[in-house]
Length: 157
Image (cartoon, rainbow, N blue to C red):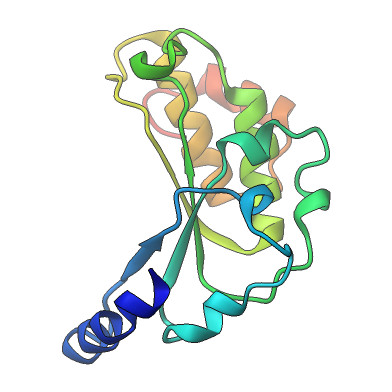
């Protein structure tokens, strides 16, 4: 797959040098053979963004420490949380978000997307989305401070 996209990514970056071109792997670090080696990263231009699925990685109690050691490269993360397809739409993920967003920051991730298809008009969904914004802005935020801010907040953090 990497070889098949080399020319395409080079062309895309030449045509749009400030674009974000994402190569989605649809897997987490734990599924990469010979981890933490990432020879595939060097096969594409360094501006390429590599998107990893963090859902299973994040469930590992050893996250993020177990997943340290990869060579620096542009990384986005993706989570399958609080949505109907995983039957988690009513689960409060704020503690998980605190752990995963700060851990992903430690691992060098620039961005985390979530497959969350819910509107924010339910208290749980609103809190989950607020938590993502809070830890994306400040990965060092502690959980108790967020809860205090969350209860005092209007519609913004």
